Image: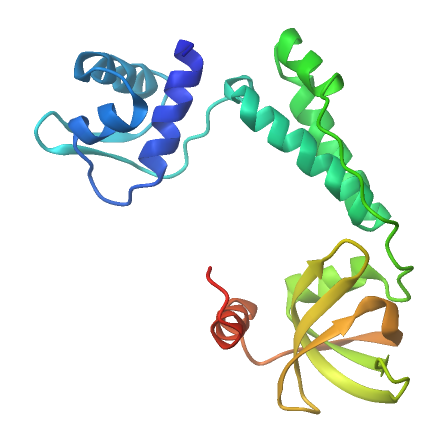
Length: 227
């Protein structure tokens, strides 16, 4: 394993632990000797990583430190490329463009050989074309971020139309459809709304009374979805 990739592996391992972890455990997880581990910790500290601890006590990484983009491993580069290509195929145009822009920014600061890996990646995404959305997905994402109520005119699977206020807190992307996950004031429960069945949508100025993180956790518990 190259030294740069080894340092990245050590950094990622430290990030998984919230409390001090022994050098022996870190050495085992990163596949190096104790002596090499101590040198690698010193190297990261020299680059600005706030690693606290000492031999016999354990080590902990304080938050806030980021390695430069050229420290991405090849697997991570491939994951970014695959993710960006999936977003380009499955997301709305604005989010697809944002994904492409983000990947371009990363590629711009990568070493030449890694930049070639992005441009010549053989990881491909093939999805069936999504159902055309009637709702503005960008407006939905903004409502989620700002925790604003949305007023929907919605047509269900049988064609029955209803008007309701919802508290949107998540947007799920499936291969062909997108689904808003929300608390429904009409039903007084969590409901899922396909964006292609939203007839009309009006963002409200009023914030919903609960935090979206709380709603998300409660919904996950109800659906028995692990975090």
